[in-house]
Structures are given as structure tokens and as C-alpha cells.
Length: 115
Image 1: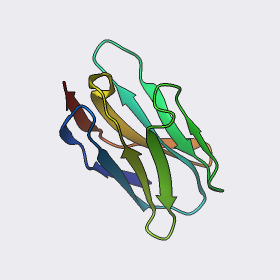
Image 2: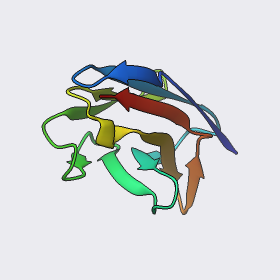
Image 3: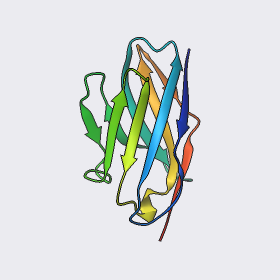
Image 4: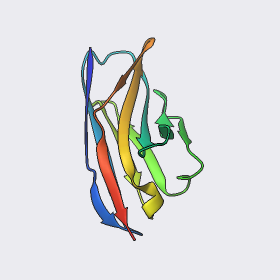
């Protein structure tokens, strides 16, 4: 089993920054892609950023140039640095990791951006 614990969410003013962290524990060998998703009520969960085991990254169009995903394999942690936040970034942010054929999700952390 794999457990994920997210942290770093909160309330920030528009134009501000936040850094999300997702600590992975449990059976962590062979973890492949790690990523962040977000969801607002009434909408589908949206892919925000993905990072492969080799460090290759992919971002959603709405966050390109503002968000940066990174991972520390030694700490089994994935990060999401969010800059130039706007109210449209308000959502619950979820961490997801893929291990083999299975995907695991964190419990989510709320990010609220005030105008």
C-alpha cells in the first residue's frame, strides 16, 4: 500500500504564492509518475502537473509558466510551487502517484485565492 499526505494549502491573495507538498510512504519502490490534480465543486478533476520518474514534466495549459512541479526521490515527496495565483486557481488540490498498474490519491488540500 501507498499513503499520501498533502500539506501547504491555505488562503492567499491574488498574485501570491503557495507551495504544496505530498509525502509518500508505504511501499514506495517502483513509483513512476507523480502529479497534482485539482477539483472545484461541480466540475471534473483537472490535471495540473505531472512529473515522471525521470524528471520529465507536463503542465495543464492554465498553469503553464506559473506552477512548477518537482520531486525529491530521497524524501519520497513531490512538490508544487504555485506563483501568480488567481481566484481561478481556487480548488481542492490532490496528489496522485502511480506504482505499477495502480494509482493512489491523497486526501486533498484546499487552496483558496482571494481577489
